Amino acid sequence: MGSASLSCSMEAFVTRLPFSLPRPETSAQITELRPGQGMSATMNRLVVISNRVPLPSAGPRAGGLAVALDGLMEKRGGLWFGWSGALSSSAAEQIPVITTAGNIDYATVDLTPDEHDRYYNGFSNGVLWPLLHSMPDLIQYDRTDAQIYREVNTRLAAQVAPLIGPDDLIWVHDYHLLPLPAALRAQGVGNPIGFFLHIPFAAPDVLESAPDMAELVTSLLAADLIGFQTEGDLANFAAAAALLTGAVRVGGNFVQIDGRRVLLGVFPVEIEPREFARTAEANARKLPVVRLRQSLPGQTLILGLDRLDPTKGLLQRMSGLRRLLETQPEWKRRITLLQIAAISRKEVGSYRALRAAIDRESGNLNGDFGEPDWLPLRMISHGVDRATAAGFMRAARVGLVTPLRDGMNLVAKEFVAAQNPDDPGVLVLSRFAGAAQQLDAAILVNPHDPDAMAEAMARALTMKLADRQARWQDLWNAIESRSPLGWGRMFLAALLRGAVRGGRIELVDEDVRPAAMAGG
Ligand code: F6P
Image (cartoon, rainbow, N blue to C red; front, side, top):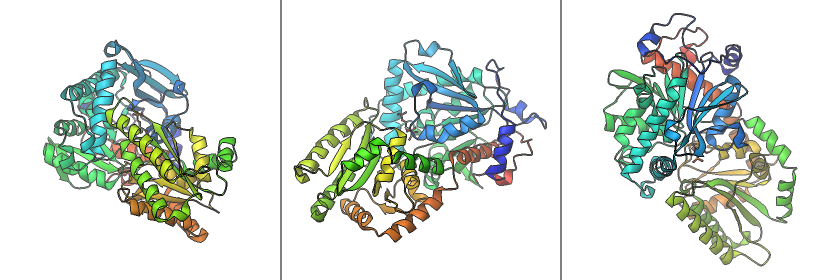
């Protein structure tokens, strides 16, 4: 079934269930559902669980998770459960606070200051984030952090379980919540559970740097579907599951553990390309972009837009610029790199160290190559809103998206969407970003190699119009027919397929034809 026809039936079958629902049936009872009572990707309520919840009161939504899920949740409605963003000492005893906006019910709980320190900063971002990005040298392991991480997941499962109805589809997101599928099962939740990892999954020998990974992978395997950004991530997970838990890979992307089948699938996160293109076009005429252009007389803009994060390759990018100016000094006064590196996770040691290193190196770079009336680098450590960012992208001749490792990197897709097709800029993309699988018409680069970075920048800066247009067209073709909505629907269809094939439910809605479902 194509996404267009799914879209019609989805709107027709949106259901909203009250919160005071009975506790879920067991999986055995769900298996006995009869036609008309069963599971469908289109009509069952969706319960999204993620660490960060984009509460409407928090203002404009940013970050890959919100970009990926907002559209689906707005269209379909449902329940979105997670952390409120606030800290309080009574967090563990809280009943979730419900805030309704449109057809989405947000249910949130606080974290205690200690949990925030250990579950979020310590283990999620101090261990799992670098580890899963294959940067084990950055992990700061502490056994108590690992324990609190598990305890927070157990508590979140207990707090969300009473809100889950018997027909709900559950979709858990990202590395903060690896133990949640098992924790939900321990609460008696028999519903289909899907899990999507927004970041990469590392090879098993890298994973073993953290002693908890066997347990975490086992917990994750309590889901019915586990989704990844790329085939490489899926292959790493399947290898880790085999090595650490004894799960056996069986046909069609299923792994088998304890007599149960779990489906693995690849679902690259997408953007809304046409909408982003419109935003970029409109914002290219607005004041922040006009002022930026006016501040660059006779210069070509190279743009980098990232969170300040060790995975983003910011120091390596500066090394590339340094090498370009050393080896091809004719670019002096003719280019400016605007690097927006929005500070994030500043309580985590590796992020603080990176900020200091970036401040030092950007000072050195400008000191070494700058002139009284020109600096090669403008380093900004606070973010800009998404609309202005879109306008900046359209104004740039070169977009540098050169992470050392990245699950997907939606900025790469956004840069493509933002371009003027008649005079497009050139994307320089790390081959270690998930986006490189789809965007192979970009100039692909190894960010660890400063000479390759310098060559890629020079190539992008000198590329002829016809070549730029041809490459841009290929890149646009790779993203233009995709959307976050299509991504979400593919995942949910595969979740049902996984839950049916795993023996958890019986699929009774003829609207969902297994042949059209993704994931193997
Ligand atoms: O890339 C993974 C991700 O969850 C993104 O969705 C989001 O941009 C970011 O990390 C959120 O990070 P944090 O919750 O630490 O701000």
